[in-house]
Image (cartoon, rainbow, N blue to C red):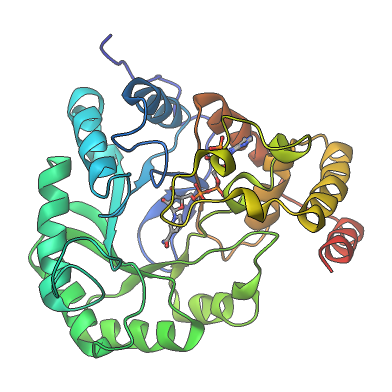
Length: 331
Ligand SMILES: NC(=O)c1ccc[n+]([C@@H]2O[C@H](COP(=O)([O-])OP(=O)(O)OC[C@H]3O[C@@H](n4cnc5c(N)ncnc54)[C@H](OP(=O)(O)O)[C@@H]3O)[C@@H](O)[C@H]2O)c1
C-alpha cells in the first residue's frame, strides 16, 4: 500500500541542535545496523521506517557494512526510500559510514582516501541517492595518517556527495585532533558517534567535554546496550531477541546476558517503574538528560519498540536522589 506520511508527524518530537552547527536532529534517531539486512523481513523494515518518520524521526543512520550481508541494509533502505520517502528527501537526514572491512583486498577497509571515496560511491549507488547528509569515518585507523582521512572527508563534502562529515569510535584525544584538522581544512566536523549507555560510560571521562568545547554534536549508539537495557531479558533469553539470533558482526550474544547484568537490570527496572517508564524509556531518558547529547541512536526489531522508546521524551529529568541510586546500582 502506498505511504502517506502522518500529517501530525512534527507535533511531538523534540529537535536538538547538533553541536554549534545549523542542523537540528530529532532527540531519537533510528539506526539500521540490524533488522534491515537481506536476511530480514522487508515489510517489517518498511513498517519501522514509516513508524519512525510518522513520529518525527527524521534521521536514519546506516553504514556500508550493515546487513547481513554487508551492504544489504543500504540496498533495502534504498528500495524502501524510493517507494516511500523519495518525496520527503528534504525532510530527511541520511547518514552512512566507512571504516570497517567491506571488500577484499587492500582498499576495502580502514581509513585511506581510496577506501572512503570508493565506499561512499558504492553506498550512494546502493541507496539510489545523489548525496548523503552525513558521511562518517567509522573507526580510527592507526596506520593511515589522520590528515589523509580528514582530507578525504573534506574532499567528499567539496564534491557534494555529503553535506556534513563526522567521526565514530574515536577516543577523546584523536577526536580533538580530527576536529581541529577538519576545521583548518574548512569543513567543520559536525558530529561524533560513540557507544554510550548506562552500561558503558567511557564518554563521560573526557570525550563529551571535548565535543562540547569544540562545538561538535554527539549521537550515542547502542543506548539500550543492544537490548540489555530493556525488560526483554528479565525472564530469560527470548527466541526473537538479538542475543538469540546469532547475527554476528558485533551483535549481542547470549554470553553477554550475565547474572551480574541481570541483577543490575532488575534494580534499574525498579527505578524505571517508580518513574512510570519502561526500562527502555528510562535508559534513553538517562542519556538525553545531558544537553550535550544531540540525539540518541536507537535500534529496533519491531515498530512497537520505536513507539515505546519515543515515550522516553515525556520525562528526561532525574532527581539527584535518583542519579545517586542509579550510580549505586552500576557500581
Ligand atoms: N558507529 C558504530 O560503530 C555503531 C555501532 C553499533 C551501532 N551503531 C548505530 O546505532 C544504532 C543502534 O544500535 P543498537 O541497535 O545496538 O541500539 P540499541 O537501541 O541499544 O538496541 C536495539 C535493540 O534493543 C531492543 N529494543 C529496542 N527498543 C526496545 C524497546 N522499546 N523495548 C524492548 N526492546 C527494545 C531490540 O532488540 P531485539 O532485536 O532483541 O528485539 C533492538 O534491536 C545502529 O542501528 C547503528 O545505526 C553504530
